[in-house]
Each structure stands twice: as C-alpha cells, then as structure tokens.
Length: 152
Image 1 (spheres, rainbow, N blue to C red):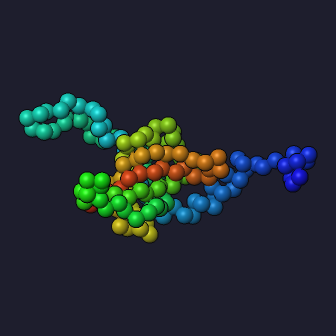
Image 2: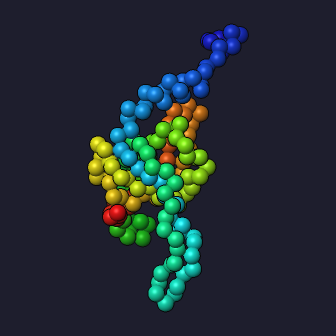
Image 3: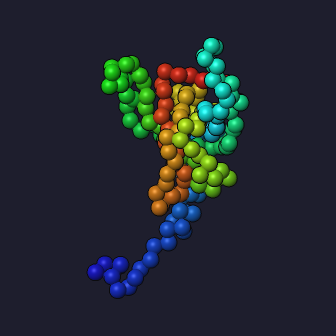
C-alpha cells in the first residue's frame, strides 16, 4: 500500500519550497535585468527603415543563476548560419515581480555574469516563464543569439 494508502500521508509542498528557496539563494551569482523593449510600439517609417519607439522599460533587476541548456543551433533549415541556444535564468521565487508580467518577447540583460562572464552583454529574448509545482525559484527560458553583443 505504501504511505499513500489508508494512512493518507501528506506532503507539505509549500514547506518544501520555503526550505529549498533558502538553499538555492546561494546559487545566484549573476545579476540580470528584465526589460520590456516595446517591440510593437511606435510607427514604422518605410523611407528610413526605422521604428520610432520609446526606450525599453526596466521591469526588474536582481540576482540570478544562468544555465545554458544545450549546444547552440548552428544552422537553420535553409542552412543559414546562426548561433542560437536556449538559456534558463533562475531568479528568487520571492521577488517582487509578478510572473504574469514576464512575457514572451521581453528581453533579459546580464549585468554581471558571475561565474559565467561570457553571458555578460548577450542578447536574450524570453520565450517562457513557467515553474513546476515544486517551485523554489522562478524559471525564465530565453533564446540567446551568441553572435550578438549588446553594449550598454
């Protein structure tokens, strides 16, 4: 029968998350900011090939752990040379940012890569933010163009 049979043992998932959150805090060795680049804002001028949009809004700045997920893709289906890879950013679950405000298309800037300085200045576009039921940090997935460096 096991512990889930007639005894109805319970698992304190919120308690486990609180305990683990304190443990994973030591893993955040980088600093990032999440920004809304206003991609859809402003009119497009066809003669100058420019879009008049406001400057990006910084939504949140704080600690993170950066995790590259796999080798980069180096070609598209049309054999165009690219260097795109999935990178996951872990931020504290207790941060003041509302996860529903972190939308696809927003950008991440790595202000300090910590133990991964090669990520500083990279271009990261958010694809999703989702957690499991055992969440002790917030997980943000992004695509990185390893050929682009942002100077700021």
